Amino acid sequence: MQRRADLGLRMDHLRASITAHDAGYRLTAADFDLAQRIDAVVAAHQALPLD
Image (cartoon, rainbow, N blue to C red; front, side, top):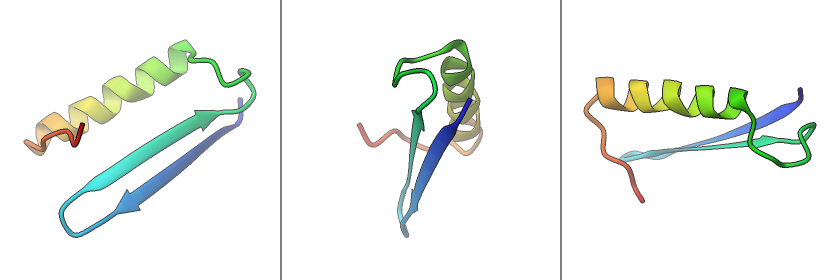
């Protein structure tokens, strides 16, 4: 499955954006798995969500 990941790194924040093209722009189990992994990294660094 082809995924495109964009990372925007700034002095005070990081924004991650992931798009899965091959799944017809629908969320898959792999997308939810990746979101959980990102949440774990954020929690480990005691970061706060932007929105």
